Image 1: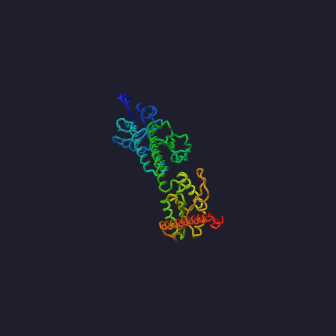
Image 2: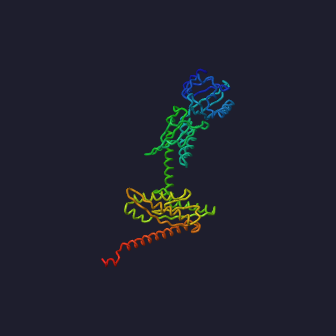
Image 3: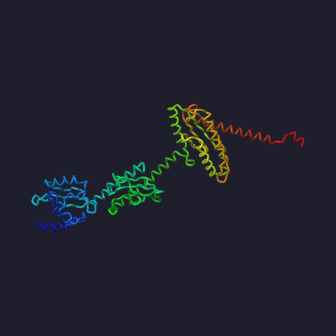
Length: 420
């Protein structure tokens, strides 16, 4: 009868085990080769626990004790290690036979279903991590932790173009620094029309990666590319909201933030400062005569020249058109502010060669001291603006006076005319 049962078991696709009370395998049918990769003779005589995944060992031992004690084991799931080192997920039906003094178990391989569930959960976790990522490093660290749960992943690295810059690299916990990532399995991080780099994976044995595993890694790389694109767009928008596109200087919004911070420091440290309002003279004439391209180059050159005239702790901004401002901290007197204004005026007035056109710009500069001329940003800006217009008016009056004197000198003397 025993041989008959064995012959019947040999026909089953599920694995049938007969296990002695001490845990030694007495019989296993040929299906073990399909499920576990071992020939029956390689398992018979061995301890059943030798094939169990270390992570499931304790709860499997507890389940075995319950079955030996007489409880019918139905629906228990655990993991086994196949001969090639991969993981098999098993669903068990087991009972104890007092008559034979054997534990009889039927193992059904549910690896495909479990792996499909894990892949689905992994992809959902990757998507969630991508949506919530606020930085590249946080995203890649989350991806690494998620993928470690699914496959034999030893390390992960992210390499961005241009220049193949490694922006993230981490080995398996306890594995030390990541080795040369150029030999790792790689998936491109790309969106339609744009490649950002590669997501590289250090897998224990690349041959163990199934096509489904590769699909997951490809999905991770695609999600990473989407996040990189989103963060880059966010950074561009944030930059555009605070910096002038043409000159790269802070714009009005950022300058007002800097003024608020400077005022707070001034009140705390009981210091003073100055605001210079700089407006180019006759800038419209440059645009009209030479075109906006030359005008833009002039604005860029002027912005650079103003920056070279102040300290790193000071702030230069373009607040619109041909208007610039410079916030000078720790300036104690009008004489100090005048000296900086004179330096800027001289620097702006140096000739420029732009697009084959020789230009010599001029500027009117209004000065306001804080807190003397205003203890709020708007008040100080208004005072400096008015001072700038007064300076511009003085420049125009001076030019008109110089033109009148030149005209008078050019007129022939009336008596001389008569004599002639």
